[in-house]
Amino acid sequence: MLDSIITSKTRLKLLVKFFIHAGNQGHLRGLATEFNESTNAIRKELNNLSEAGYLEKEQVQNRVRYKANIHHPLFGSLQDIVRKYVGLDEIVEKVVSRMGAVEQIAITGNYAEGKSAGPIEVVVVGKNLNTDYMDQLSQKASELLDRKVYLTTQVEHLEVGLIVYEGM
Image 1 (cartoon, rainbow, N blue to C red):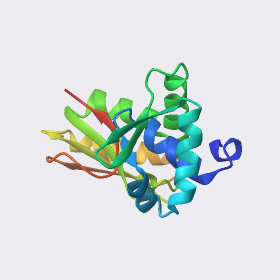
Image 2 (image 1 turned 60 degrees about the vertical axis):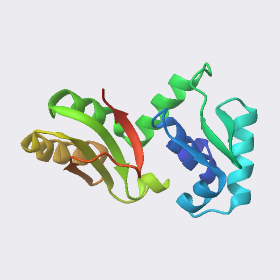
Image 3 (image 1 turned 45 degrees about the horizontal axis):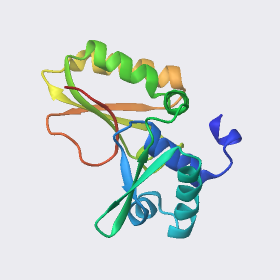
């Protein structure tokens, strides 16, 4: 759907990375490695998105860090579109409302790397989570999105993947 409107695969990967969760950030070489793309392709799209005002850049030591511009008038709309594209809007809502004390939800695997093919791997971080409900939700989400959804739990916060929710 979204890939037919945004024809640049690199731009789509960057939009998913930065707009799935406002706290996601990255720098040129890290993004190039994460997406397995050339630094020139990443640089071109980062410059385009920054000049349009969708991304903010900040100099940190000898690197430029990029993140979503949450003050841009279209930030909320873009975030909604990206979440619907990935299929996370409904998963996150259901997980947070019925799983228990959810501290963090992250996407790992193909989606975290900006690839839209393959299963969606979701890691739910928290203590005393309702794992019975998680199994039901995984099946329902797979049917709803017409692709396999794997939900797993753990206690420790993740430092990798796309963070899509962070609780208090």
